[in-house]
Length: 241
Ligand SMILES: *[C@@H]1O[C@H](CO)[C@@H](O)[C@H](O)[C@H]1NC(C)=O
Image (cartoon, rainbow, N blue to C red; front, side, top):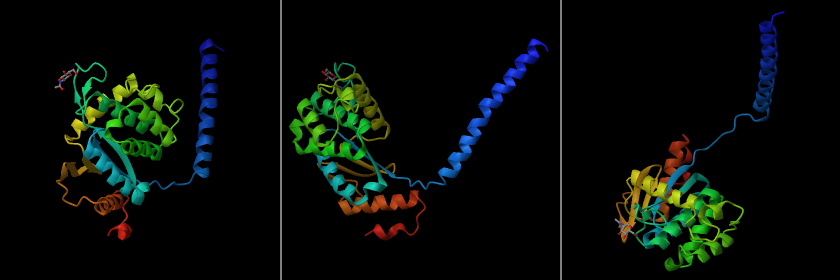
C-alpha cells in the first residue's frame, strides 16, 4: 500500500465520519420541528430627535397604537442628526445640543440590547420625565430601572457608557450610523412616520402630509392593512374601522 493510498483511505474515512452525522441531525430536526408559520411584522419607523416635542408627541401616539397592534409591528426609531467632524463627543450635531445626542444614544442602545417592550417602556419613561431631563445620565439610569433593563449586565450600559454619559464608543457609532440611515430614508423632520417603508405622516409643529389620517385609529388601520398585505391575509380586515 502506497502512502498516497493510505492517505486517501484516511481521508475517505474522515469524510464519511464528518458527512454522516449532520444528515441524521437534519432528519431529526425536520421531524421534531414541522413547518413553523412565521408571520411578517410591519416595519414602523419613527424619525425622531430625543429632545424634540414633536417626537415626544409621536411616541405617545404610538404608545396607544402599540396597545392595539403590538404583535403585528416591528417598531424602531431612527435619529435626525447631522454629521459634524468638529463635534468632539459624538461626531454629529443634534438640533437640541449634545444632551440630545446623549439621549439619542441611550435610546439606540436600549433599542439594540433590551427586549422591544422594555426598550419602548424606557423611551416612554424618558419622555415622561420632561424634555429637559432627556439625555441626562441620571434619567437614563432611572428609566432603565423603571423599564426593567439591567444597565450593567444587559449590554445597554456598555453601549451607552456605564456612567450614563451616552459617550461610549459603541453608542456613538450607533448614533452616527442612525443619522446616516435617517438621511438615506429621506427623513429630514422629527417626527416622520414610516409604515412598511412608506412615509405616511409628519408632525412638525402640526400634523403634515398625513393623507390617511393622523390619529391612533388611522395608524392602526394602516398597520392592519399592511400586515394583511404582507401576510397574504384577505380575510383579515376585521380590525379595520
Ligand atoms: C459643528 O460642530 C461645531 C463644534 O460644536 C459647531 O461649532 C458647529 O456649529 C457645527 N456645525 C454645524 C454645521 O452644525
